[in-house]
Image (cartoon, rainbow, N blue to C red; front, side, top):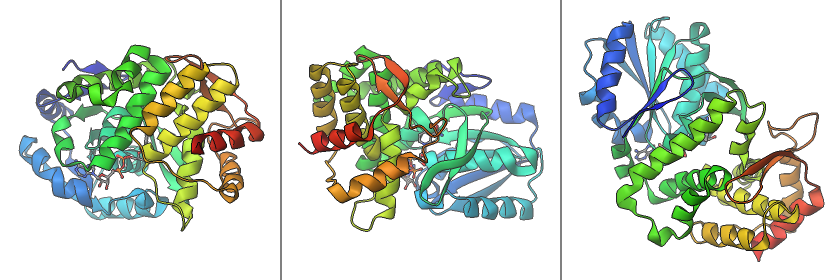
Length: 355
Ligand SMILES: NC(=O)c1ccc[n+]([C@@H]2O[C@H](COP(=O)([O-])OP(=O)(O)OC[C@H]3O[C@@H](n4cnc5c(N)ncnc54)[C@H](O)[C@@H]3O)[C@@H](O)[C@H]2O)c1
């Protein structure tokens, strides 16, 4: 699988990536190597990585509990403290081995430790491979508000090794699939078509699909690394998706949704908005709704859930001048950014989602 050049760093694929990684670490002459894992990537992924790391440098492993609830500033303080106690210095490199929580928080901790040390992402979930580890966004949640604190700083390199996916639970695979579907919907209609009938997806060729997804995300980020324009396309499904994710996290009655599960609902709702704004046809909307509903379990929203979800939209990072901004589909494979939508239409999108 060909490496992909991102803005200032390479994205490497498969076994060959480890040789590059080892040479890179040698060349950089890092003082120590710190590896950040969570409980699951420690259990399932570290035993693959360690034998493949050919280095005589000291390696320190730091572990945090698994889960989104750990992605906060308190965990950062613990990590900065442990790194200091273990003697990390400005020539330390941090290897983030895990899902999007590890790459997000690890990137942020590294970008801010001693004003910034090098970091490398080795994503171990599908979602982190096709999305979180690519593009340089790092950060943590503020309470239940997603990704409110963070920086844009790119890693030294990203190594995507799909062997890690063999232990990933099915619902986590589905969560990553949501972002792959999004990449097709916003940028590549034939790629979307490849997924539309999931039963017809050739999973033997899944590595190629992952590679294409990474390439799409990278193409968009390269055009607009700081999200002043077209990078907002990647937020399709995420404006409502993030609000739903935060709401379900706070609520005792709602199921806690994985990131991709919330984004899947967000994509249906925002496709409805696209249809109502005349940007896609009714047929295209139904096609999207049917395809996503075939993969993801429905979630029920009552009338009383809607106002708190609308309130959460106000905190969306994509808002400008106090206005909620959507990235909506303009036909399948294209996007129109900076779209304002009235609350009544958002409420209608939830009503249609339940039908
Ligand atoms: N920075 C970005 O551009 C960006 C983009 C999308 C999502 N994100 C963030 O990514 C996070 C979600 O990422 P995620 O879905 O990877 O969640 P996650 O990191 O919580 O991983 C999901 C679960 O899988 C476990 N796991 C990881 N690798 C495993 C493996 N190989 N085998 C078995 N279990 C494994 C983890 O321990 C965790 O329990 C969210 O915080 C989201 O905000 C960031």
